Length: 459
Ligand SMILES: Cc1ncc(COP(=O)(O)O)c(C=O)c1O
Image (cartoon, rainbow, N blue to C red; front, top):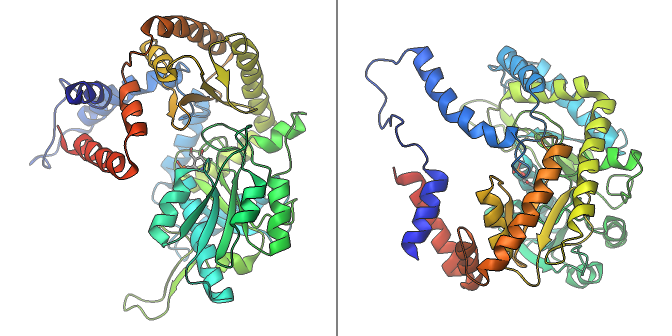
């Protein structure tokens, strides 16, 4: 079993046979062309999969001319560091305008404020830190708790661990959305925030945000909506007439929103926003130090120095695409999703979990669904495996056009038939997922830490 696991991991994560290895800085520098050649060889090979539409999520736009445009902007601004607004005051302008444009998309009033961050995880981390510090100062809560649907992103678990916040978990209803009654039950005098997703990563389902907003407003508890995945799809989907419930500042109980520009905002990787309804909350996000020997220091986000070039490229993406560009992109993605939903509903062995718009999770009552994912993987697909219940999902992006959708449906049909022949036998990642699910949490966490260490240290 152990050998089998390492074999699978080696094939997946160590495909570098024949490439030179560097364990120290070379004494004499290598010519630029040679280095560029090596990088191109490695990355071009890896890019094939997303370019051909075989991956779930990962690259959300990816069209050559769009990527070239972003790269050109980055090359102009690669040295810009918003940590030094005295040197690059324009970085404040770019950041403030991104925040304003996002606020407008999310029905925010003038008072809505926030920051550009390095990604969804940082946006979420900052929201949780803000609520922890706000609750400590305002309500003297020293043993903070958040109320978290189990489908919320792992970044909330990570933030809670870093920040010393206890999580009170909320189960999902039969449609894979947070159970509002349970949220009410979990509220205590230590609750610093309630969290919901629009939509959640695993199932692409949107929590009942209107109902939760009412609870949060009634109890005067901050309410964070994680729209990292959906922030730049849902507003446009609504305009296109898709059934999108209210999820943003339009609802009075929503006090903050995270939304990733590096996903469906079509910016380069490393850009997200965190927005607050009220500047009083936002101030609790800042770090300030007026006594440091290095001089007066402040940073608004977790990072100190940050990549201004990425932020400016995100600003440029928003300006260039315009609302019309986002609406057209959303239309394409949702049409592909509708096609896949309709055609896979004919497969009796599998089912879509909940009622998602474009992140489609497939489970099964009769097959080992990980085997189906493994069979898809043999055909080139890179899908996300999910735990509890076993499932896999595909997050559709602009890389998935109708011809990719047809390929997905036909490969899925074949994979289901192939899996039926396998019976209960487990292949590829299936035994790893099966084992992780069956082990006690301490053991599986320790095992995973060991595997991660192996991944980075093993040549
Ligand atoms: C709903 C949701 N929240 C948060 C995140 C975390 O984002 P990042 O990977 O940019 O840190 C993701 C990533 O997929 C997500 O889907």
